[in-house]
Structure formats: C-alpha cells, structure tokens
Image (tube, rainbow, N blue to C red; front, side, top):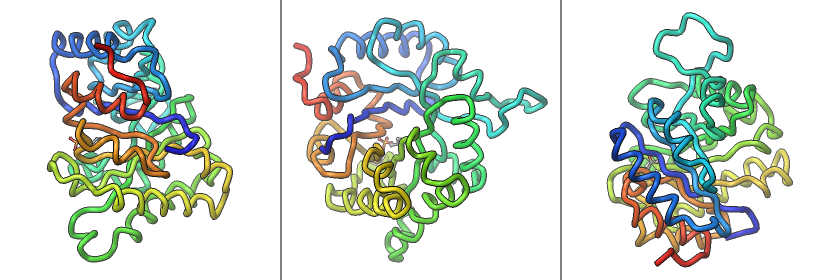
Length: 259
Ligand code: 13P
C-alpha cells in the first residue's frame, strides 16, 4: 500500500433488518479498535442511516449512503433522497454510479456525473464506481470502458473535484460472483485510472484513494491491498459478516484483530 490512508467500505446493498443491522454495527464497532492505518465506512440502506449514525457515535467508523438524488434543491421528486438529507443524518460519503444502479436502473454517465456533483455541492464525498462487464473485458474493451466512465467526470468537472472524492474499480463480472479479479488484473486497471487522472493533475492523482470491489473476502484482501494502487476495498457480501469484514479491515489497517 502506498502513502494513502486505506478505506474499507461495506456496501450492504438491499440487505438487513433493523435489529440485525444494529447487531452488525455494534459488533463491528467493538472489533474495529482505534482504526489503525485505515478508515472503516458503512453504507446501509437509506432507512437505517439515521439509526446507524447514532449507533456509530463515539466510534471511528464513518457512515455513507449507497445513492443520492441528482437534484440538490428540495422539490417534487417522489422517492428520491437528497444529499442534504444524507448530511442531516450523519453521512460523510455516498456511493455514485454503482454498476447495479447503472445496469438495473439505467443510470447513464451523465446522471452519475450529476450525482457526483450534487454530492460535492452539499459536502459529501462521492465514491465514484467504475468497471467493465464480462463481455467488455472479453472483448478487450476494459480500458475503453473504464476510461470513458472516469472521463465523464474529468471532462465535465475537471480533475480538481477528485481531491475530495474516492474512486472504486468494481469489475461487474467480479461482483457477487465469487470470481475476484487477480491482484494483477486489479492493479493494472487501478494504475490506468491513476494515470488518466495524473495526465491532468499528478498531485491529485497521487493522493486519490482507489478502492477495489468485487468478491473481496477475508482470504484475498491482503494480497489485493498489498498492490501499489489499491487503497482499500468496497465490499458487498462479506461486509455483512462481522468476522469476514473485520479481517478485511485489519488487512488494510495493518492492525491485529481484537481477540
Ligand atoms: P461483492 O463484494 O458482494 O462482490 O460486491 C461488491 C460490490 O458491489 C460492492 O459495492
């Protein structure tokens, strides 16, 4: 790992129930220790954010949301949740452009950029997700697709916005499939993303946290996080299991898990 402080983020997706979520948060808080050299971030479903923020008081664990409205001002947007509301309940981060939002809900690069901008407008740190599908990888289009997704932000908003953002590389074929990118495959794309940004601003590229997501588990986290351009993980399934997630976190923080 380079000089950047790693982030290990749990994206709970549409999982959990009130009691189970509280148990998960309380047990993670007990096991996280002082945090060491990494930040832990939890992204529960919207309806649990307010409670989670109270459960997380006096812990080093940060709170984030999985999505937000692209609109900033309040108004007639039935079913949407604004960045301001997320700030209100204690969120610091918000995931934008997750592949499930792009694929299942048709979010375009333009919408993802609008959400990225909306997040920063209210002081949330966007976690911009990018990644290719299996067909795109097998068709040799990984670089083209990931560059297009990163460039959508770079060309519209400029490199400076990445000083207050995080990027997550999540190859779609590795999400929820148990098929992790090898450390070499992940590192190659992370380096590509960093180089793309460095071409505009080397300092910002050098400080940017780029997380890997896609079947990160206790058993593969350490070798992924050891690579130069991998600054932690965005973890789905394994973030719902206390011992798995703590092991992944400690692989990034360099601390021993609490006994
Ligand atoms: P899994 O860890 O379940 O593969 O999910 C990754 C992911 O999509 C995190 O955002």
